[in-house]
Amino acid sequence: MGKSSKDKRDAYYRLAKEQGWRARSAFKLLQLDEEYDLFKDVTRVVDLCAAPGSWSQVLSRVLIKGENFGRQAWEDQDAKLSQMMRGVFAPTEPQRNIELEDEEPPELKPRKDVKIVAIDLQPMSPLQGIITLKADITHPATVPLLLKALDPTYDPTSKSQHASHPVDLVLSDGAPDVTGLHDLDIYVQSQLLFAALNLALCVLRPGGKFVAKIFRGRNVDLLYSQLSIFFEKVVVSKPRSSRASSVEAFIVCLNFQPPEGYRPSLEEPLGVGDKLENILRSKAEQEPVIASLLLQDPETGTWSIKPSLAVSTDEDIDGIVELRLPNDDSEARRNGRWIAPFLACGDLSAYDADASYHLPKDRIALDPIQPPTAPPYKRALELRKAGGGAYGKTNIS
Image 1 (cartoon, rainbow, N blue to C red):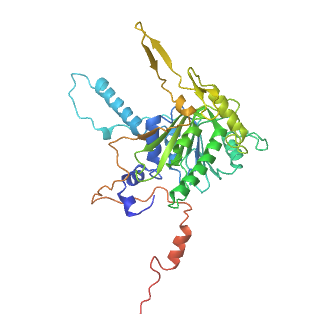
Image 2: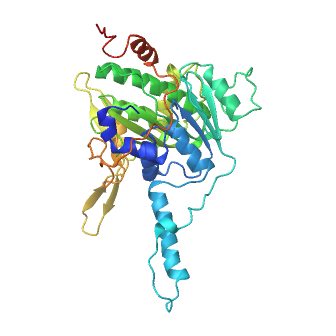
């Protein structure tokens, strides 16, 4: 979080410092959780590209400390208030105002056997209960380090690249240093997402979840189709705290269901070669086909049977036949037409990330919760300071 004039007027930038978050991106994860209930039945999490640690901080406070935020916190507070109104005050007792500020702090519900591993190439300040690894997620040597952190009994000398104690949720909020060339930035981001997905497939349990940042572009539908091979539900989502002027979005993958016979390996990521073709063929054969089309090739004149839309028919007493289309998109998948669902999440009454809000006169500027540990511009600041500031040294005659 910088200190530019726009950041000072950004409501989420100020709220992050007021509520003790390391970065404003913490609200993105909280709003995604409100929509998809990401933290339900989750105790083992891997946070990729974690620095400066705002998402790991959310995981620490929700899973380890047992705090509630967002809609869940509001529902708990409303239920407690309703209980007080019904049980504490008798009908004969005079009514009195209830000051929410005087209430006891909410009850914490920490979860048992929580293990969170945060990985980033940049150094990150430690957090309570978080195992931090300084490693490159695009390098194959990172997988043994992660498996060792998840399971201390793991033998790094073994060639196994599958977690004996898989995790429930894998998060990735990483992004490359943007250049302003959108096509190049989208390509580099897709490669970073590719590396995060390969690592996630090695540690996720069946039914697990995967959330990663993407840059929206022309290949979003292709990305959706690829992820649908491994996950039952894939949605592209845009949190309210993410600026609408930004091309960033988050792809949410729920219910991890690896194809039969698939074994994750970074040496052959996503089953490159003929393995991926066999996986797709076996997955297509599992889809039911009720109706077929008999098509004739106009060049050769040969006839072929093409799987068509799976339909069911109902015939009433008058002989009228009604065709009912299925609810799934099986036909679109067979014909290569993939449409990635897009969902904006977050309360519409919440702050607008692109708006500039008025600052009160009595406002006190707060320092960031966690200053950057190793910013890429650190050397530039040192050189500018040695040169006498932004305008250089001045000579006074």
